[in-house]
Each structure stands twice: as C-alpha cells, then as structure tokens.
Length: 231
Length: 231
DNA sequence: AATTAGATCTCGACT
DNA sequence: AGTCGAGGTCTAATT
Image 1 (cartoon, rainbow over the protein chains, first blue to last red):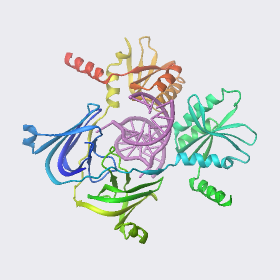
Image 2: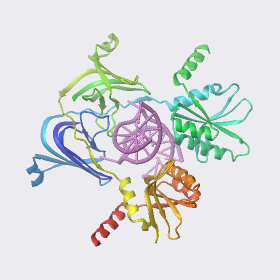
Image 3: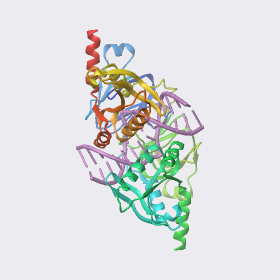
Image 4: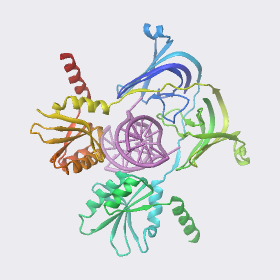
C-alpha cells in the first residue's frame, strides 16, 4: 500500500465523467493497483476511485498541464472496462509505502437472517397457537421468508426486512398472488414484519390487507435467552 | 487527517456486530472524527468504519487486552446512534498527520438525466411519427419520465432506467394504473426503456403488456452529434 | 460466469 | 427532518 498526500486534480472518464478541482487530498494506492482519492470529510466513500483490476502508470504531464503546475500524472486504467482515472499531481506533501500483507477478513453476525431464525423459532409471538410450516418456503419466483399457520389453520406468509419499505410490500404481494393460486394453500394472508416500517409501506400494506408487525430484535433475543436458560 | 498504519484488531457494535482479527491495516482518522479501516485490497469500501458525527477517545487497554499485546485502545462513538467501534492497537508502524483543508467537491455529469434528455429530443427512435408531450410529467405519486403520443395519437408513458430491474416495472405499472384513471389520457400504454434490461424485469413487463426498449447511449449521443452538425 | 437481494449501504433531491 | 430514488453503487450467496 502506498499513501500519498498531494495537491492534485482528478478526472474520471467512464460510466460518467467527473472532475475534482485542484486541492490537497489523500491518495491511497493498494497492492492490486486500485486507487482511492479521499478528502478530510464525508463518509467512507472516496471522492473518486478506481476499482480493481486496474493498472497505474505514471506519465509526464502534457506541456499544458506542466504549464498549469503539474509535476506528474497518474493514469489508472481498469483492465475490464474502459473506465479511466487521470490524476494530476502538483505537489507531493507526504509519501509512505508499506506492505500490509493479506487481511484475515471480517467476521460478521447478520441481522435479517438472525431475525428470521428468531421469529421462526418463536412464531407464537405472531399469535397464540400459530405454527411454523417452514422457513425459506420455495416458490416459482423465489423463497418466502416464513410460511406458517394461524390458530385456525389458515396459511400465512411472512416477509421479513430490517427496514420495511415499499418494495418489500410489493415483493410480499407477488408471493401472495402466487400462493393464492395454489388450492392446497389458499386462502393465504400476509404479514410484513420489520424492525422499522416506513409510513408509505405501512399504508400500502394495510391497503392490501397485509398485517404489519414491528419486530423488537432485543426482545426476541431476550425471549431466546430466557427460553434457552429454562430448557 | 491522521494516518496510522498499525497491527490492530477491531470490533464494531451497532446495527450488527463484526470483528476484525489482529492484522496490519491502514487507519484513517478524518477531521470530523470519522474512522476508516482499510486493508491492502478489496474495493473502496473499508473493512470497518465509523461515520460522522462521532468522537474518538483513546483509552488504556484493559489488563486482558494489555496481556494480549495491546498498547492502546481507541473508542469511536457515534454521536447520534449507539454505534461504536473499538480499535485495539498492538503496534504502530507509521503515523502521519496532515491538515487537508476543505475540499471543493466533485463536478459530475450524470447518465440517467442525460438519457432522458436525449430520448425526449429524439422521441422518434421509439416509433415513426411519435411526438413528445413532456418530460417529468407530474402525477399524484411522482413524475413520469416521459409522456408522449404514438403515430395514432395514443398516449404512452416511458420509464427510463440505466439498468432495468423489476422495481422499475412496478413503478411504471403504478403510473399506468393512475394515468389510465384519467379519461382524458386513457388508454395509456407503457414503455420500459433502459440501457440493459434484466430477464425477470423483461418477463414481468411483457406479461403486463409493457414494451421493453433497450437504449444505446452511444448511438443516441451519435444521433445527437449528427443532427447538431446538420443544423 | 451470471443473477439476485441486501447493505453498518451512501448520497442527493425534494417535501 | 423524513422520504424516496439512484449509485461509476459494492458485496456475498446462489444458480
């Protein structure tokens, strides 16, 4: 990894064109040739970048660029597309290279998968006497998160999201349409379950007769802990 | 901006929990307190990070952490949520601070807006004798990208995407439903136009009687160039 | 390899 | 401040 702090201007040419005027920025060149251009603010997204696989070549600035003050020019070319980054270096203020080695990588504990597992294990939180049919119930257009039956034995399809938005309701609607064509299952009703449900999504769901349930992740985990302590 | 290359381990606690085992990484601390943890590969996304607004405090490692080799510990706490990053520093290999100042920001030239403009200007590419009604035709649920009339005078709503996926078809369907309630416009048919249309989206659109059109950005630009040269 | 759904999405525009 | 749509999305899982 090579770190350069420099006064520079940057041009990107590819799926769009973008230009960064002359300013002081951090340039990170990774081992795979990829480049990040960061300013001293914003979030983790760089102002500009080139994704691997790509190659960096250093060229002489054109007479016009040299006239404007450029001392060097990087051309970063993507190997698969014709995306290209052109960095004009005017003044290098700091430079350091270091070999980091290979990273062991991130260990994650997901949320939506965990929510699905917890809710499937405690399906009675949806209603007294409810029973699980199965998780990831397969249909022609994809898996339904949870299929279960209410106390009367009627089928219910549950769609789970971390944040419930309008496209989640659309997705569940498509599943319900399909499931209701199956005489062995019909009539199938729907539950839209999420940690947080956006007002528009709630309105659309309610309008379509889909029940909305707000999931409390910590509470579900709590139930889980209590029950695992009991048994 | 503060750059640190160090052997470190990182834990994130917030919307999910994640752990990075001990390894050599780049730590970037920006002026607003935000932190990026980068390895020497991957894309522009850091292995782990904390978005602003947040504060970084350096604390003594716990006895257990010190035992394991930690010499310092950063706690990066988000100011609005309870997201938190804990960085255990085992060995600092390089450190450098630099004031970058405020960045003038990125100048962009978008694609979807440009596609919409080009198609509106050359609406006849959709069919002989077609005429533009208007771009961004406003409805109660949002603007339709392009409203036009075919050679027979029938109204057509066009939804434009760079990449045509299923939710774009859903969006156009909602517009068509609404537009067809207006007796002055009905019957309104739909065109789903994109540089690239995913098979599932094409199937759904076709099933609903929506015509799919693949847009050639370069060709449209070409027509534009030729016509501007002619006139 | 291609497709799809999720993301600690991020980012901007608009209400 | 919240919502919505787009992204040079990126990324991981699955077909």
